[in-house]
Length: 203
Image (cartoon, rainbow, N blue to C red; front, top):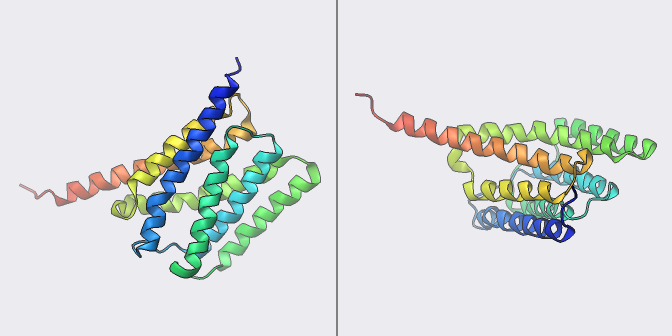
């Protein structure tokens, strides 16, 4: 049964608004010098995210599109800030391999007129890169802003609901982010438990 279009529109608006709010603590920390984004990572994520949004638009995303656009817009903004406030080079040797895979996805999209190829390759690459953040969140839970990831998790869940129907291509991006954010939150929780346990003196 199709959901009310007005409800879907509201879910999309709320998910986009929450996604915007989620970026604010991270951007604040960059300005205050507490966070120094890695330039190459945010450049790659900006490119991959832009491809994902383009594929969503091509496949007819409506209510859930605002969330995806805010996510990518925030990523591009962080990259722009990293030019001045970040660390590292803009590209590393392995980044060229990632860009080559993204180019393959775009080529397949151009040859077949099927955006699912570009989206699938983009999500796969992004998920592999996201695993590094999961490991970091477990090893250094204090280095992650918990409120940001909780807000992103809620926003991605609402964006998935805003799709309003079972459409694998349109659901792929918000569900991918929901999975990634769940893993990051789990890693933070486990990392904090590990830290507390290590601080308890043995009897």
